[in-house]
Image 1 (spheres, one colour):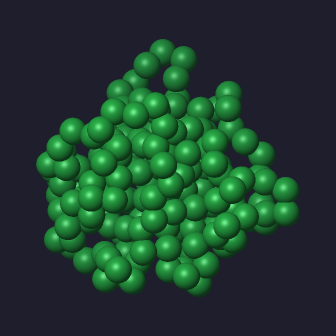
Image 2 (spheres, rainbow, N blue to C red):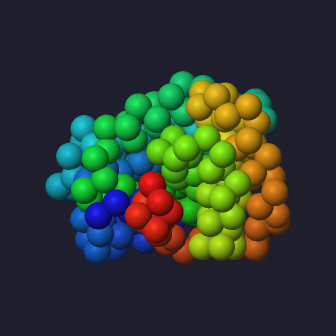
Length: 174
């Protein structure tokens, strides 16, 4: 099933059972990084240990170029026959930015604004991490289109934790 599912950590076990994904991306602070869930192949679980920050802070790990490069390489190995789950702590910032990055990588140049509007429609709470978006925009050579599209999404509905959100590649024309 060509589906990217973004979810908070709190419901990850349920989402793994329900969706039976082939690939999993975890974006959590280094001190809260999870082990690969039991029974899930470690080779198909990408663990990115970064804090949810956009600018450097002492003692914190900001999402960097190497993290986005790892995501792109990993996601390009996903054949989309079974879902890909992307999660962070709340399912609002790091995971939404990562899903948007993967969607943009699979889409044509110029689709950035449409994909950002689709994200906002499906996830009013989405607030994609700007550091991840900046690095993805540069690596995908989008000349600022991803950054501008995310900024034009408008304000997110404030939440403590998001809800699971599906992005069907077929529905998005990808």
